[in-house]
Image (cartoon, rainbow, N blue to C red; front, top):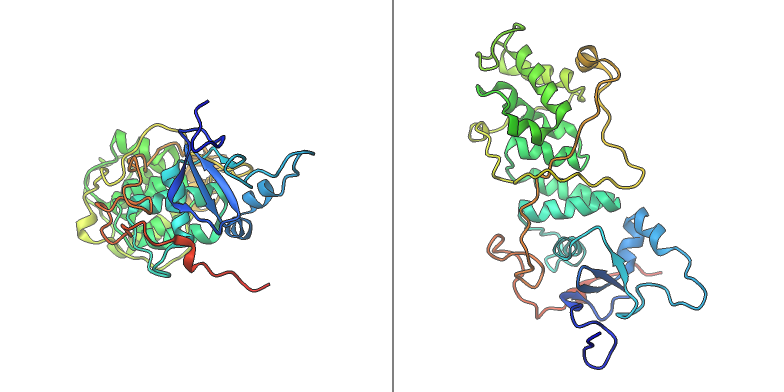
Length: 317
């Protein structure tokens, strides 16, 4: 096996440009990149990593992650996604998190898989500040188990628009959501059997109550979607047929078991098939030193001269 600089590290494995921090105390191997960071964040935030990092080391062996020659492998993430995820902890702009939908999707995905609850909340808050077309947004939030009450404006657009749900949109939305939207569209037009493209016959103020009932949502303030969002643009986040990642011991959100949805489908309504992939258009490489594409996010850091770990503060023990 070829080596580099006389050590035993394979030539194809290299240290990440930005997230190999000399003060770090654990080395992760993600694809062909070594990340040296602070295990504190992983043990503090994630029960998944607390369990993994606490596993006993076999006698005579050093714990994984203690060196480049013995890194801790991460097999359920790409190096691009992992670098974006680390940016949350090593962002040099402190509370200013300026990133694209694509980047926040990477962060949300790993926060969901590894049960970083606070990071997931941050990703959702930042995604809520940006416009995502209704179909990709519903597919994204369903896939990563985000509060469905946040989808009320998106449901409203798809319920009141003239065009029915297309086959491609139905594939992205999943069976349960598509059926519930079809029922909502029917009820909004006032009479069963009317064409899906018939004019809506209920007032705008009644749409919220209808959707809250059909989707068994909580009674939350309704935030109407702007008129510009009425026409769905599914190119915002492309979809594929890959199966959604589900962390061990976590089930897909349960089918609503009360309200009008239960009356329509019964208590044993089919589970959602959350198998669309609304975030398959990830950038192939870390164009900037932080793993973000500067072309997509001009305000992202573009220089690798600043040591990301220089501004990390740890609580005094």
